[in-house]
Structure formats: C-alpha cells, structure tokens
Length: 533
Image 1 (cartoon, rainbow, N blue to C red):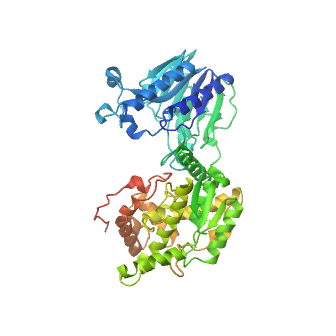
Image 2 (image 1 turned 30 degrees about the horizontal axis):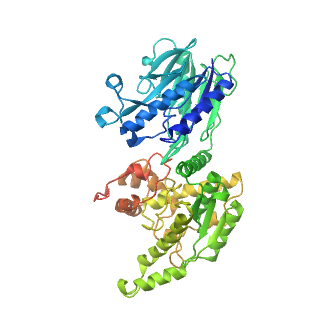
Image 3 (image 1 turned 180 degrees about the horizontal axis):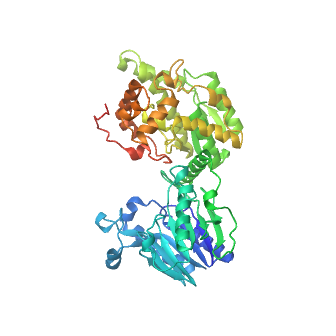
C-alpha cells in the first residue's frame, strides 16, 4: 500500500480553513498514487481546544466538518477531530479531561473516511482500533506507548495519530527513545509503523511534527521535517526501504530545534491572531536582539519594527549596537528618547513622593515610560508588541510590572538567560544576525548609572543552574546545597522565587518548550512557604 502522511498545521476553530487545507493534502496524496492518507489527531478542529470542548456548537460544527471532508476527499483518509456525545457514545468512550462528568459536549475522536462516509473509530483515542482498508489490516492508536495486547490479529500497518508537543529535543517523535519504541512495535508485529504528528503553534503550545514511516525491520521509509507543514509518501510494501536505520539517525542540534520551535510559535501566534507586523523595543541588549532575529525569521524583516528608547542612563554603545542589529537583519527602526517624558513625570510626581522620585520607583518609571511609547505605536498601527523577557528574569521577578512585562507574546519567556546567549551564538552560524558586541557585553537594563544585572542577581551561569534544578527537577534546598551550591545563594534564590509569583502571573503568554514552564509550575500567589531545609 502507498500511504501519505499529511503533517498538518490547523488553527483552533478555523473549520473552513482547516477543511480546505485537509482536502488540499488529500488531493495531493491522491495525485501521488496514495491509497490512504493519514492526518494527525485534531487535524480538523485544531488543538488544544480547552473549554471549547464544552461548547455544543463547537463540537457540532467539528462533526459537520468531518462529514464534509469524508464526502469530498478523493482518497481514503484517517483523520482526527471531535465528535458529539450521545447515549451510544457515552457508553463507549471515556476521556480523561473532557468526559460527560466534566460537562464536555464532545470528545476527541478519530474517523475513517472512505466512500463519502466518516466512521468514528471509538477505541483509537484511548486504546487501539483495528480495521481493514483494502487488503491491509490496520491497528490504530493515539498513544505511541499503546499496549500491544490490545491489538487483535496480525496487522500489516501500525498507525499512531498524535498531537505531541515539543518540550525539548528528546520529545520529538524522531528522537532516539521514540524511534526505539516504534521499532519494537514494528518488529513485534512484523508490520510497517506510521506515526503522523500535528505541527504548529497554538498559544503556549508548540506541536513538533516529525512524522515518519518505518519498515518492519526498523528502517526509515519516509519522514517529515519537524516544525513545518509537509506531505510525505511511502510504500509499505517496499522490499528494500530507502533510508537510514531509524535508531542510527544522526544526532540533532538541540539549539536548532529550539530555535525552529520558537520561530514557528511566534509566526503562528501572530498570524493565527491576525497580526502581520510586530513592534519591538530594541535596547542593544541580548534579549531584544534575539527577539528581533526570531521575529525576522518568523515574519520577514519588512514586518518587524524596532524602536530605540534611550533614557537618561542609556549608553552610546547600546544605541549603536541596536542600529547595527537592525542594519544586519534589515528591519526599520526609529529613535524615540524618553528623557523629556521621564523628567516630566518625575516632576509631576515629586511632591507626592516626598520631594522627588528616587530608588526603585525612579528605575521602574523608565521601564513603564518605554512601554507607553511601544503600546501607543502598537495601538496606532495594529502591530503586535513582542515582549523581550526571559525565564531567568521572570523566575526572579527581575522585571517591572506594567513596564517590561508588557506585550502580547513573549518568545523567550520559557528560555533561561544562558540559553538565550547560546541561541544567539548558534543563529549567527546560520547567517549574520547579532553583532558580537551585543553577545559579549554584560547584561544591563540601564536604569541607573553603571547598572549591571549581576548587581542584584547571581551571575547567570550560576543562577540558571540553580533555577533549572529547582524548577524543572524539583530539587529541594538540601539537594542544591549538597550538590555544591552556596547555601546563602540558594536561600536567596528560593526566597525571591517564592516572593514573585504574583509578578509572573502578569507575564505575557510564552511558548513552553522546557520540561516545566513557570506557568505550569504555578505555585499559589498568596503563599508563605519557603523551603528552609
């Protein structure tokens, strides 16, 4: 059998667009001689649907879309969407997050579409569905780790339709652990193994793609690239499959995968929310430089607008570095000094603040003044404001509420500062982008004379190692100290993290590409617990 895998990037609720996109892929599959085309889970409705699963109207349209696809598809297809609950299906299907008991109107379902009819495969989402297409017997699941004992008979083709998110390189479907699992299943049943995964950005989620087909002896028949929409075609009866041994695939570059995931997330967040252009405050620092580069890769440099906002403590080097970045990448800039506006605000508030605005209030006013300028441009031209914060700063509350926490999307919000530097260095190996002066200079918000981030934070190479172990690995104070970190440093980091949960709740949405984002961590805002060991 010749099969096609349609690695599709749908938008949640965009049923007409998703339907036409799926039909385009189905036509391409038919033109390539495919007898069967596989689509990912949620291909017609998008994912995650979250509270939309409780909308009867949403689920009803989702089912109508499946039926329309079945009527118009020129080739037999297996595709994922939602189905409505009724008395029959409630008895057949349970769904962990969207069950009738939770008030859901429908449930995720896989459909076999052939001869104009969409047939729900009720077992596929939660276990394994077995059926025939032509002369081939197929076993289908939405779980790569399905229980082999649930497969009945001897299938010719094992199919996994998934919507797996990217949480680092080892979570790709084509990662070594995933491919080993696929090879074991293929070998056990002496069957071809096909996995079709969703691709695209949706709010904070990044679906990775990386769909593939393996022969029964574990050789790659065909594979789609991660982080891109693609149709791949393979023959399941090929005597000598072309390709490499799946478990011997060359190692991938984790920096390249992270970068491509962030570009995809930024592009899809903008385009799926009807933003064609973005505005960024470019400071001459590493964060805004990487954000600007991501934005140019995602949207095109002609859609990126940089704004230089020099304040009373901005260095000349920061201004020249920001302009050099813009020249290299090809995006336009304008310079809007905030000094006169800042001075006017300080004067207006002086008497109310005891005679003058000083200390932290004076520093934060500069950050808020910059955001007034940026949001005014955003509102005036319909540009989306991209936030330039990172995970290290968010964890430590090293940001200004209603200042540099502003923005609709934070591409680096789940990326530690040291990783931001690594991404910058990697991106420069692909083409000239970020001036070396920006990478080499000590990080600073330039809110007072001579300021450096390490005036108030541990050096990032130490801080990030503590943060990673505490957040992603759930290490306790004792674990951190026993591993060699200074006790006073650990105590200060844990104290500050606990204190600033309220500020993190005001951070913009960010693509979550780590094992545990700060949003998912979500400790209570009102919380007096600090690990004192």
